[in-house]
Structure formats: C-alpha cells, structure tokens
Length: 288
Image (tube, rainbow, N blue to C red; front, side, top):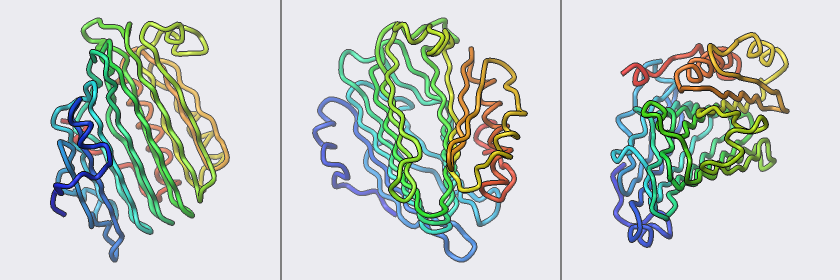
C-alpha cells in the first residue's frame, strides 16, 4: 500500500503545468468479520490516515486528507473508491474543503465509487466553501451492484459567509450519477453561477448561501423510512425529502452550515439502522 510514482490518470502530468494534480485509489474487502483497506495508491497531496475501527471490525472509518485544504484554478483531484462484497466503509474529511478564487483556470474534483453486492459506503465529507470568483467542477459517479448501499452527503457554502463574502463571481458545475446494476437511479447536473438570478430565485437557492443534500440508495428505502424522515424538522432553514424507487433524497437550504449539518445527521441516524443494520456512529473527527 505504498505511494506510486507513475501517473494514475492520463492528464496528470499536463495538469501539473497549470495546477496541482493529485489522485487517490482505495480498495476495501471484507475478510472474515473485518472490512480491510487492501490497496492504496496515491500521487500528489491526497491521502488517507490510518484506518480506524471505532465501531469494531465490521466498519472501517477512513479520513480523507488534502493538505492544501482547498482546490485552486487548474488543480485536478481524482478519488477512486472500490468496495468488495459486504465491505462497509465510512469516509469523511477532517474539516471543510474549499474552492479558491481563480484567475481563469477551472479546478476539478472527480469522485468514482464502485460498490459490489452487499457493500455499504457512507460517503460523508464535511462542507465545501466556495470562495468568490472560484471556478470549479465537481463530478461524482457511484456504481452499485446487487444490494449495495450508498449514503452520500454534500454541503455547499457559497462565499465565506463568516466574513460577509457573497458568491458574486465565478462558477461551480456539479454532476452526480448513481446507478445500480447499470441502470440509473439518480442523474443530476447543474451550474451555480456567481451573482446569477438562480441564487436568489424561489425555484433556486432562495437567497440562502448554503445548500445540502443527503442521498440514500438502498433496497430498504421505503415509505416507512420516508415518513420517519418527514417527522424530523430542520432546526433552521428549509428542508424537504423525497422517495424515488430505491432512493431517498433530502434537500436543505439555509443561512449557515451548522443547522444543515445537524438535520442531515438526524436523517442519517434514522436511516442507518434500516439500510445498514447499525445505529449511527458519529465520526470523532467531527468534534475536533
């Protein structure tokens, strides 16, 4: 599980001329009753810390670390995560990620997750703060096989709200695709333009700087779980939940990250016993 020196993506060396390239590939397997990180390859400043087992051997917690703490114009980051049959992984980050302002080049983060039958992946990075004049692309693709379960959270804060900054310039393009056995469950594309009418419009972000989503793709998603989610009200902002075939979707808009994070955590706590057979275990890194 050592670092590799050869390029792992075709455009890695060319990206280095305009930004900071990095790639990380992780593969997990279930061995006996333990979920184990069996393969790790990385190039550039994108790594994981030592696997942790706060819940016992069945669930492997990993913390994704990007030492620059943000993506600048021209950066190319790629994460590939592969789970073997019945492996269970919870991935998070040590703090908020950032998209820095750019003079013209786009930064890009590509995330590819492949889950075998019976695997469970809880993909719960902390929020991303999009600086004014940032130019970014976030592309996430999840391929599920059989009864695999995916729980994914995403929170975007437009502008450094604590400093009174708004997202007046720039652009963040978002793409998410989830499939099960090759058939699409969720396809979404969108562009958030700095200063655009969408940020203020009622069908858009309604003037709120923070938006968040929680997606749960599992065969156990049903009307009972939907009703359990509907009974949980966000402490601030506005939230809504929807049930699609094999997929639960929660959306939230609000003035700051904290109430959105609290609401998504409550929804996760309600869903986890149903879709993964375990009570919620909050990652300790969230409290530091």
